[in-house]
Length: 132
Image (cartoon, rainbow, N blue to C red; front, top):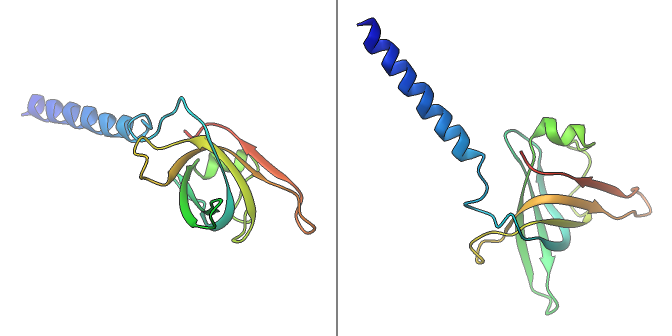
């Protein structure tokens, strides 16, 4: 009986470790060896664990607005880089660099760098790092 419980516990531990590893693999979703740059306006910013998200509205040369979602670091990683829930506000103009999606029809980016240029009311802000 004890050996059966030990085996079940071991199998459960292995299974949970595999799902945690799969969760942290961005290679299946993003082209990590490539970089794209987006310029737009913050539409939404949610700082939370395990990953924060930012939505920006990007206007192309024809005036068409497309919303992009950026997957960003968790609360601890971002706070160590000076980011908190007040850092970016809806309407802020920003520039994001990051890894594009593998599916080109999916408007999302794995954030590597965020720049908010200085304005009359806000100083320039830059964050750069790798999402963990």
